[in-house]
Length: 407
Image 1 (cartoon, rainbow, N blue to C red):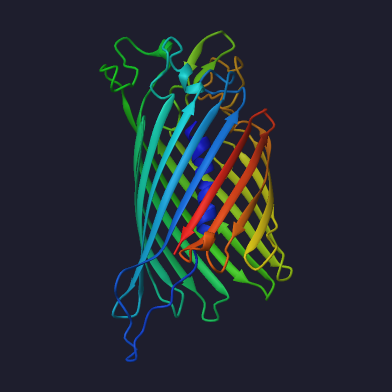
Image 2 (cartoon, one colour):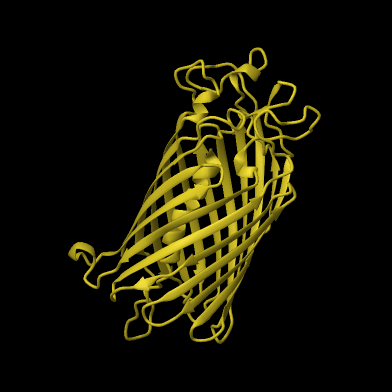
């Protein structure tokens, strides 16, 4: 459940990131002294509504409703100042709040009117600090984050480095992140040991277990300007997870009629490799192509291809239709409802880890009028993005995202 809407959040936050590259020129007086007062560069607000439906809930062993809704909002405040040495210091504070409902989570304990995790709120603030050189383009940054939800909390930290060639045609980016999570181990009602609690802090004071899950990720990106029309980037993002990687309130059913909680290895290596191409046809059309290959040590292999064609209708209105296709070979630990071997050590009926293919189609509308949105010079940009997702298992979802920029 969480991995579904976190993936959605990552997608719509990409809208904000793809259009937040404008760098203000430092204010200078007649003595070439640069103003060093901290000032607000821009404020971004992103709001998204997501809903899905399907019939392969992992909570009930691969069958049952996957109905879920998520309403996510983030506000991003970017400030900057110049130091005495002329380096630009950028501070970015982001606060996100998500509210979701999940029908499948209600099946953790179907004897109750509503299980504790059927509805939840996730809060995730983060702070980033970057020091950059306007002349060279080189930069160095640090980041910290926190996230809390009903059954887990997470602390994150990161570092990023950017190096640009002298001719400004080549750029190398490196990023490293660590997330230290703690899970509340919630179990299906019929599989709880005697005296084990439901996990509801307000309604049930019986004890439950807590388990760690630590994630370490890196990203290496090499961007190159090939010519005046073509740009490309190579992206490699190896990562490693260790700890409780199974979702213990998800059931698995076996050929002998028994039922157990999901069990997966306590470590996982991931290696996505991507290629991105941007081709500028003329002043009105851009062709953006993206391909990614994914592999991990659980046996999953996936290929993703995406095409987006921004069309500039006027100097301040653009429309960007997009299409993404994904095909995935599932993990060796997956089996549908009732088909697990009782002798297996690891097992899951989570269709996110199965052999599937999917299509995602939609469009993005972007407005940047010279006089500002609604005549306000500080309200500089508005984006509206909509997409429809279709998976071979029958899962369908829709997302609508609104992004606003103020400067």
